[in-house]
Image 1 (tube, rainbow over the protein chains, first blue to last red):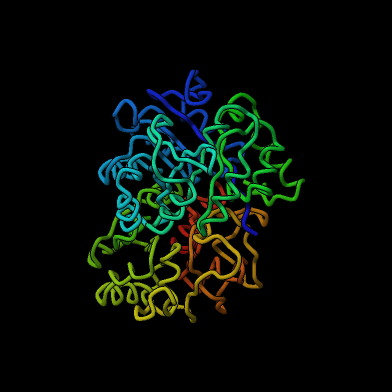
Image 2 (cartoon, rainbow over the protein chains, first blue to last red; image 1 turned 90 degrees about the vertical axis):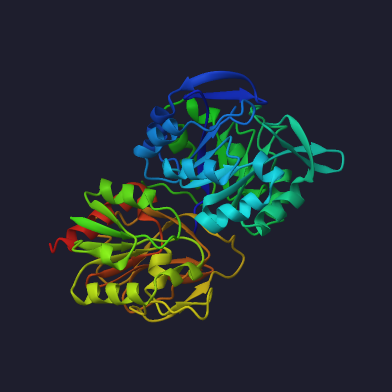
Length: 253
Length: 201
């Protein structure tokens, strides 16, 4: 059986790992390459390197950081943040990323999804959706959660899949950084709307939260950042807990 | 050991080249059949739609079949494995190389497609040189929507809706459905095993 994936996100700024609460109040948590190596040794299934401020400050993701992380990793590496064009994506891929994650740029020009999928294959294209609960469903925000879009989360996920996205990275803005648990309703709604895998993000705090998002939330993968940063064997312990709960996990590496 | 990495514009080669280098190979990217030169082994990577293998035209097919006849080791990865079979339902008119019997099929059932993630490998009765020393409970990283059927030369299978070939090997020709270059320690061991038998050990 296919294992559910545990993905560590390294939110980076200026070559340092940071993690914010509701995208604000950033604090440092170390060098990306050091953390990546530690997670790899601890059994992480994938890594996401997200240049959190790239869109706002209008600069590209840090290619040196991508190369630095990719050099020592032989597990899938996704890079997102500030990818606005085919050229941006090419630089990221050439630096060693296996997948690119696009968000604001895909909302502005959805044809970018198709063009990237045609060049690199759908498996290399992740569309990241930052969603928030509204009175009548789930709204979508762009530009690191600062701009409200007209699209709705479920419609946008379906459109992204139809345009060639290989996976959806779904972040609950309401839960991001709160450690209050994933938004399982949002995740289940999106997962049930598309045939492609959905990565749940935002709100991880306890092992039970992961178990919930893999069952009630119907997530194919779960992503977190800060819960992995501050303890030695957080990934291994989490995977063993989930396996004991009956969630299929990769336990040997 | 110089490995020719066949570049037919089906995705990015950076990770495969990095994995082969880490396993001890000197990698040469081959953009034309002539680039195969005297490389000691050939790797055909590839991601995406089966139609991409149309770029492996008659010249490529002749050169690769000749290399196989000469006993040069060859490894197909993902779409590269699928191309070693007779064809794929993904692109009915596009023939594969036909080194292994059977047609590739779309993964069916209540599964997410593309099928992305880690899976263990179920060994068949066949002795696997590629999986030598890879722990029985190790997982490999897959990302695909189509898969190859079981062949007499299938040395490991994976089941997802249907059982499919995850490793196939006959003599010096082999294929893996997963991405060894992205499968951590187990994947690097597999690539090292390929180089070992490519060296004739």
